[in-house]
Image 1 (cartoon, rainbow, N blue to C red):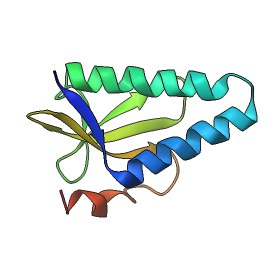
Image 2 (image 1 turned 45 degrees about the vertical axis):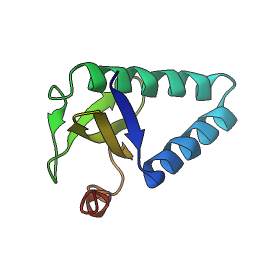
Image 3 (image 1 turned 90 degrees about the vertical axis):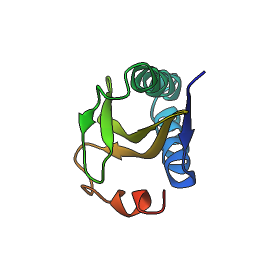
Image 4 (image 1 turned 45 degrees about the horizontal axis):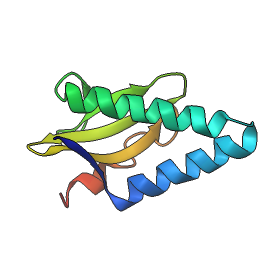
Length: 100
């Protein structure tokens, strides 16, 4: 079975946003988590369907939220490098891909 593997920095981004949305409105953190999980499932099922991105990565939109997952397909599944906001700090995550 294919798996999604988050690098540590991407996992921290996910946790920070879940916390933010949980504090913003009751149930919103859970909806955000579900939307991220759905995006992960799409990326796992169709890894080459994500839009091409910098540093040989791809991205898939988190529906209903201003984020996308930056990932790279690999034999075992995908490696997630970032949970990036659409309008903040473009390509800040590119240095994360060099070590992998």
